[in-house]
Length: 219
Image (tube, rainbow, N blue to C red; front, side):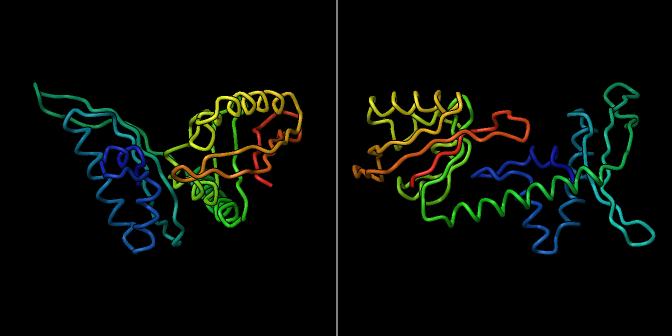
C-alpha cells in the first residue's frame, strides 16, 4: 500500500508508514490496511488533492505476490466534476524487496547496538549525531528525538561544558581528517549527575577510501 498516502494520516505521537504496515502485517490486517490506503488515495485525488501516488500488492495466478506502483493525474470534465484519472501502473517488486531487506538489516543492527554495554553512536562528517544506542540514551534519561539530528557537541551529554564542547568539535574535525581520537571527559547524565567516560571517535571509510561517518564509543 502507499507510503505517500499513509504519510497524510495523522497520529500523536507520529509513526512512520513502515510502522503501520509492520503492525498490520503482524496482526494479519495488511490487506485491509492496503485497501483503506488505496481508497483514501483515490478519494483525495478525485477531490482535487495531490496526484495519485500509491503502491499496492497483487497476487499472480501462480500465487506469487508482486508489488506495483500507480501514479496518475486527475482530468476534469464539467466544471467542478472529476472526469478520470490518467496514469501508469508498473512493477516495483525488486525495489520493495530491497527496502524490506534494508529495514530488516537496520532493525537487526539496532538490536545489536542496544545490547552492547557501552555507549555507541554514529556521527556525520559535519558533526551531526545520526544514531545512538539505548545505554547512552538511558544514561541521560533521553529519547532518540531529544538528540538525533543535533550537532554532537550540542547534545544533552555535553552542552553544560563549553570546554568539552570545543574539544569534541575539534575531535570531529581531526577524525574527518583521518585520525582516531580518544580522551577522558565528563558527560552529563540524567538530572544533575555526571559520569567520567573514556571517549573515542574514529573515522569509518568504504572500500574506496571515502569517508562514510564517524564512529563514537565509550570504552
